[in-house]
Structures are given as structure tokens and as C-alpha cells.
Length: 570
Image 1: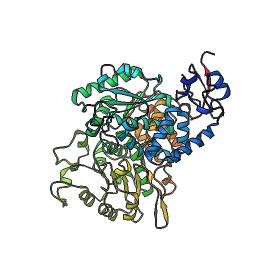
Image 2: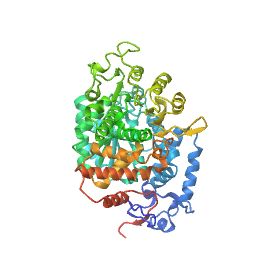
Image 3: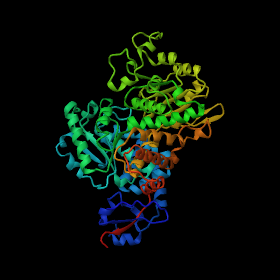
Image 4: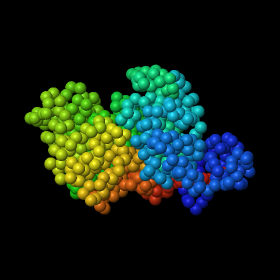
């Protein structure tokens, strides 16, 4: 099978295939369902296998949307879309693209979290690859079993830290499935070139281990040298089987995410979305917010609740952006205050992990603070003493941004910037309507999951979504178009700057900090161009003109429309 990549709406794409009859109907990349033409039905032995009426795609879209709306719960809607995805990928992507604002939360956060939790009980058919620890000596053979031969983007997880929900084992596969759907929806990456993978190394979730229906490997997680050897075997197999692929790490534990990125970032084209993608999309929102304030990023006092992989990624991106404005590395880090489960990250502590140490505040800066309770410097202490202008949440602690904390912050800054980013919605550090009420409508807000606009004092305040879908699809498209060999931090800084230019707040300071989801494909095109140019500037891609790079980006953006099928060899 060949993939159709023609994005010219005036030219019909053509795909050759050897499949026919029921086998063709069961191939989701080629199946058109009732939309097969009379000629195709004859040529591919489909007569009698379909109702006689030949439907236009518009009819199919009306029918599928009607069925979607009839579902009564988020999980039922997820299952319906997954089933459509399994039988007719073109129709699935067209339906979701036409209703992307409504359906993106179903395809991905927050509903994907429910799907991961219930994976073994809603399982219908396999999608992607299951690279389980018992297959550790046959990983290359497993990868070669993929029906896709031109894989350009792989998203992989081991299921240990799914959103804010923890260890969900094999159920974590739904995260790569959802991420890759967004690659296609947002940036037009052809679905025939995307591959979701679960590395099943067991689970420590006792509920799953005791569930007789659990689909994963019924063992506790492997650790240490065995785990590292398994990951090494996987990476080397990817390099041999899919040498042109971009490998995205997703939802690994904080103990593994950073070190795996550091180990492999110079061995193949790879990045970690939780670290680099989250950092870039947050940076973009803050760039838009400080434009509203007409202040430089380097003048902000930034407090981040949470010091895991996402928080460290955000801190790194912010520090690099400040340095690009002329701030010294030391001064940039001095403006960043991180808190983990044991309180403020500071040099007086002896329990700091390696990745947190660059952001540890000198103990002498806090020696004279009056603390609410002895022995631990909590968020309320930091807010009372630092008087932050920016408050970011990656803690997965619902309600952690209390009324007292937010009001104290608002006492010292006219327009506080507050980003409760934890996913799914149930884990958000605060609700936007509360933040707006506590700040008399002055806060600049973005959230990790979608929230409805808030009505306050006769006006409607939109809530921008600080969602990685605004970054990673464009990054992937830029990498593919530029044929980048590696992914550099400069490419994410460029992506953030490009995204910030699409902020509606640039024109209206009361508007959302992030673009509308419906505009994500055009925004992804801009991010891809910035990423491709940065790849060339950093020497990881061959030089080309900007016009040529734009042409490559367009050539790699697939539009979900049915191609004309031809029998291969005729």
C-alpha cells in the first residue's frame, strides 16, 4: 500500500493497492465504507458486500456525528470514535477535524485518562505495538511486525506516569494513540506514517495486577539494570528498523524521563514531550502574557508548584528564553522558585535529585523568612515572601492554589499570571472561575485541560488552553520537512516564539493567551517553519531556502479525503 500525500484540494489523490473484497474493507487506512464508487466496487470485488447506495463523505459525516452526539458519556464517545478510527481512518480524521474544538477533549485530554484507566475493559482491537518485557530478546522482530513500512513518528510510553493518574500499565497505550491522532489532526502527519508503542515492563498498580481482565503483563515493574537494558535494546531496534523516525517519549516517571532523554538525545532524532513540549507551550503562553503587560520575561518572579519532569522542562525553557533576552544564566535561575512535595527547592536541603539542583534557591535568600510552620517552606510561604508575578501548577494537586494564596499574590501584582496546568481537569490546581473571582477579573489564566469561558461583571473571559497539541505536532512536522537528524533545545525555543505570535492577546489584551483549537493546523504550519529553520541554523539539518522549506511542509500535510483506488499492477 502507498500513502496518498497530495494536499492539493483540486487534484484527486491516487493510491495503488493489491487488497480487494473483505480484506480491503477491513483495512482502516483504505476503507471508504459506503463511499466506494461503482467502479471501485466492481474493480475490487466489493459488489454485494456494501449497501447499494453510494454515499458522499458529507452523508457519512452527518451519520457519524449523529451517532457521536447520541452517546451519553465521555467514555462512550471515546469508544465510538476509537471504533470509527479502527474501521475508517479517513472518515475518523475528517469528522474530528470538522469538530476539533468539541472532539479534541474526547480524543485526548481529559477523556483519554478515563480510557487508559478502563483500557482492559473497553478493549476492542489492537492498535500499535505491544513491546513487552518477555519479548526482550525479540524486539527487532516485534518492530518488523508493524504493518507500516514508512514510519516517521513514533510515540512510546511505559505507562508509569499517565497524566496525573499514575501507573496504568498497558492501558497507557491510549496516550500514544491519542498523541499521534493529534499529530495528524493538527499538523497533517499522514496516519500511515505514525506508530504508537507501549513498553510493557509490568505495573505496580495492585488493582490492575488483581484484575483478571487486565491485558498487560501480570508482573510488578522491572527496575534498574534490567529496565535500562530493555530500553537500550528497544532504542537500538528502532534505529535499525525505523531509521527515519522521530521518537517521542511520553509519560515516563520522573526517575526515568530525564535520564532517558539525556542518554538518547544525541543518538537519534528524539524528544520528551512532557519535558520539552510542556516547557515550550508554557513559555509561549508566558511570552504572550508579558506582551500584554508590556514587560520582559526576565523581570518576572515565577513560582512553579511541582518539580517533576514537566516543571523542570518549563524551568529550563524559561531560563533559556531569558538568557536569549540578555539575562545571565544565574539571574534567570534566580527568578525561578520551584516547590516539590517537600517544599521549596533550595540549597539547604540534602534530598534534591540531580535535575532539581540547578534551580535550587540559595538558602541565604530565605534564611530570614517567617514560615507558617517550621521545617518546610510551603507554597504560602513562597508567595508571601517572593510576591510572584507568575504562578504555575504541575503538581496534580487539585485545589492547591487556594483563595488565600491567590489573593495574597494579587495584592502585590496588578495582573497576576496564573497557569494551573495539571491534567486531567480533576487534577487542576484551581478552577478558572475561582481565580477570576479572587483577582477581581485581573488574572491572566491558562489551563492544561479545556475549561469553558467565565462570565464576570458582564463580560466573558476566554480561558486559553496551555495544551501541548499547540507544540509537538508542529515540531514533528518541522523535523520531517527539514529532515532533521536530532532535536535541539533551540528548536523548542523557536517553536514557543512562533506559537506566541498566534496569541489572540497580541491584538486584544482581554483575549485568550492561546489560539483557538480550530486554528491549530495553520498555527502548526508556523511552528513547523520555525522549527525547520532552527534545525538548519543549529546544523542538524541541511540548508535550504525558506521557500523550499515551506513547500516541504505543505507536501507533508495530509488532508483527510478519500483517494481514488487503483489495483496495483494494472
